Length: 342
Image (cartoon, rainbow, N blue to C red; front, side, top):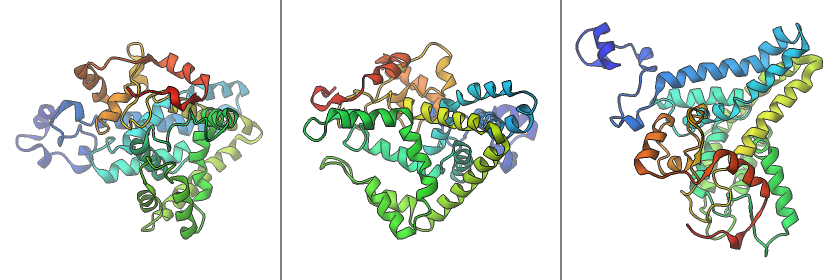
């Protein structure tokens, strides 16, 4: 790619010939390892595609299609089914590998958050904290402690979270962010409190990233934009508003149901441990190779395009198939003592 650009702009250093805006769409020149090079062109193409999908869901379908025929409502199903891939692209922004420029990366992440229905800063901090506390008492929803709770209580919590709870928690930020700042800090501390002596204490970091230095105002602005977008969308759907509600619930189900399949039943207190799940052929690319999840946890700053190569280099194999892992978690809570170290 560099040689083609040089032929267009003449000899000399690439940066002196390519306009700054155009460089936003080039593969990162800062990363010499092919596995860690950010596929900027592909990322922006995907960003455009998912923006088209989400704007179609929120605006185009109710404005132009439903007035023609209610049967167009079936189009919402394939639009909603893009949710796992859309989340995978948001995930690139979370880890700073959508674009090497932090301002561009985070700006696109915020733009995605408006479409997703939750502020990007909340999504980012929650996920980064997941990397710090995975499989500790703070982040193992299926684990049942016989001494501390009944199986029924854990099952209600677990299945609720599996069906819609995770997405509902993320969306709840649209309301919680309006709590006065001092109280908001206390709420954040409660949410991210250590669950036992072995859990990392991330409360100060979470408060700093979400509340301090005026960051709560950014949350509120994002929440306002999201509410305006989806409020307008519900208004446009009019009598067909249940279709939009069903689409949002479908998105929430996919996000919640697929979130823990990489960690269900894995050893306790192994923060970097997760499952690599097999998918047939090109289908892995449909979710940006998110199924190479243990590889991601070990190399969290590798962009999606580099994960299969690193997985192959390390010869890690696959612990389960993607479909089996998704269905396996329906077994419900697992007694703590049955989970052994790897």
